[in-house]
Amino acid sequence: MNRIAIACGAAACFLGCTIVQSQVQTGAQPEVSQTAPPPVAPPRIPAPAGPFGIGRVGYDLVDTSRPDRFSTDPQAHREIMVYLWYPTSENAANTRGAYLLGAARFDGVPEIQRRIKDEYEANWPWIVSGAIFSHAHENAPVRKTPNRFPLIVFSHGLGGSGFEYTALLEDLVSRGYVVAAIEHTDTAIAVLFPDGRMIPAHADTPPAGLSAAQRWQRMIDQVGLQITEGAADVRFVLDRLTALDSGDTRNFLLAHRLDLGRVAAMGHSAGAEFAARACQLDVRFKACVDLDGGMVPIAALPEYPDGATLKQPLLFLESYYIESKMGGAHEQHEEYFKKREAQLQACPRGTFDVVLQSAGMTHGSFSDYSLLAAGGRADETGKALHNLDLTETFIRAFLDKTLNGKMGTILDSPHPGSSEVDVQSYPH
Image 1 (tube, helix red, strand yellow):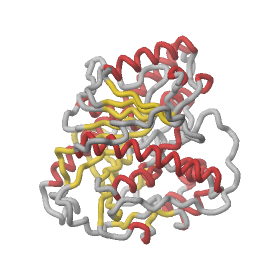
Image 2 (cartoon, rainbow, N blue to C red; image 1 turned 90 degrees about the vertical axis):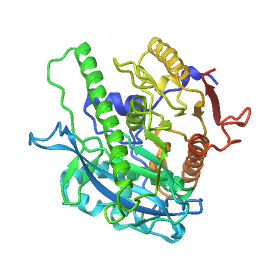
Image 3 (tube, rainbow, N blue to C red; image 1 turned 180 degrees about the horizontal axis):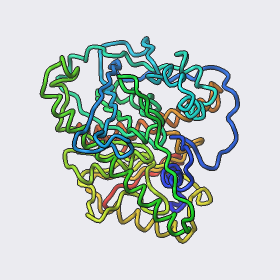
Image 4 (cartoon, rainbow, N blue to C red; image 1 turned 45 degrees about the vertical axis):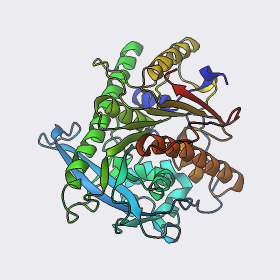
């Protein structure tokens, strides 16, 4: 494989949006401009294959140590919603839960409705009606065994939502993981709080008259601030869950059920950078999963003046792109891959770079985007499901290996000569 032709979709979906002020869809591919064909039937989220059912509960969390940098109230603090997806004894295949909690409320607010309809296109009415559904049972009793579950703190992409990763999250939960999916306020497409407040994604407006160099530097500065805040959200959620876990079930449904010695941070696109930066700063995370999060042509992982690097194994799971689809010039790409290699070599043993180049694999394939965009058409749906399965297989293998000590995973003995997957271990 010509590895210099691998590009990370986050470059366009993260860096690019700051410079052009566009509303970036979590799974959007910058080179695709045409509208998808009308769906022929409501897409179906696949029933999770693991033995556990899916429970879900939301918590409104306020970090009093941080101000709300976009609020007009100087006393306001950083506030986020976190949804815990957890194992139950329910039969997941027979459960029909909301795909996007609050969809009907969002549909009643013109500004938010417009943004979300642009995101989900023809599928939006089916999401509002419940024809597109999850397998989550709200506030269901937690599975009694095992006594404690490993925890994954998950961050969505820019302008997206944790709900857009329902297939992935449900697969992990069905295998015995708890996933804390953060709705990153101002980064998420819209966040609904229990008191009815709805906060759409923040739209940055660069001042007029900036030179190209000034615009570039402003973009880099804004991205740095976003990663800093997103990583702080990830660490704050672990702080709060640690405190809540020691309490009682009247205040926290999963009290005394989280294994806080087995915690991973995971994210997609911009959220992958949030997760990686949190792991650079916090050894409580024992593993890091970066889903197509490199920032071409800058760096694969966050770089800050403190020089912090990952202290835990990393799964760098990427989609394959030809160089013509990458942002920047060829010389910048060469520098990017030199830096990317150096950053991966600096990671602890047990780190893997996995590049997926199966048919139809795109930046959006790590979320539900490709499946929903397939609109029920058999060929496209088949590709989307295959790519979801491929993604989930490597994520599960890495988490089973790092958090559960499992040996003999697909990462230990990857399929030689596969045309779909290239696996490299680091450091080497």
